[in-house]
Length: 229
Ligand SMILES: Cc1cc2nc3c(=O)[nH]c(=O)nc-3n(C[C@H](O)[C@H](O)[C@H](O)COP(=O)(O)OP(=O)(O)OC[C@H]3O[C@@H](n4cnc5c(N)ncnc54)[C@H](O)[C@@H]3O)c2cc1C
Image 1: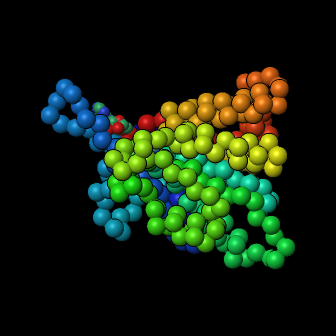
Image 2: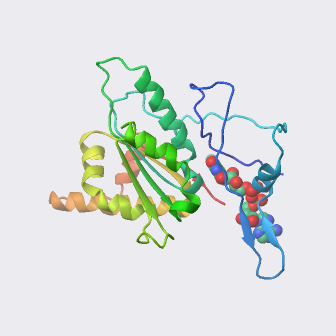
Image 3: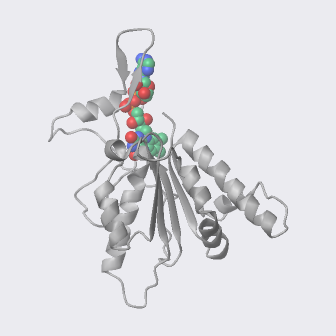
């Protein structure tokens, strides 16, 4: 059986003996049969009793990591369980705050998150609200795509609403952008960012630059953690 990958959603610097992941049980309704198919690994994990021992291996990413310089702005964009690595990021940021020396300057730390409905799948809602109150997250923007109490929005819409801030941070302050979630969302986000940066260039009287995202990647400032299932 092939391996399944999960982004670590806890911070090893906070607790070296614990490792958390964030997953949803996948279910694919079949139109041809009465039965529905569950994802093998996520169903197994969800049904496993506490205390079960299972084989796992930690693979360290050398790309999806926070910049060493705390003053560099960080823009995190994710949907659904794509929030997983950002939870480890904000836990690390909390530690950095605790250990800060007065002269430390912290860059913007912004989270864009998309899910279906507030009371259904807004993961880590309380944790995020507390981070916002304590200003560990400098900004938090949420898009609900299927909540009757909110306009239907995707995370891309929130990026568009905050175009000026994104341009300011990326162009003038050398921000890093992190994107995590399913591949369709990741390509939608890249497409929207292209539009945002094109609009900015047009305002400056410059030509559109289709390679802008690639340039950010080359500068190691655009990071993606993409799920394909
Ligand atoms: C780098 C990376 C990081 C990732 N991080 C995370 C993470 O943090 N959190 C997370 O939740 N996921 C993450 N994923 C995705 C994860 O690895 C798994 O792919 C996902 O959890 C599904 O695994 P599964 O075994 O439950 O589903 P699978 O068994 O692989 O099934 C996938 C889909 O196919 C359907 N299916 C299976 N068998 C049939 C069948 N016979 N007929 C019809 N349909 C069928 C299932 O219902 C399901 O929808 C990540 C992936 C990558 C590559």
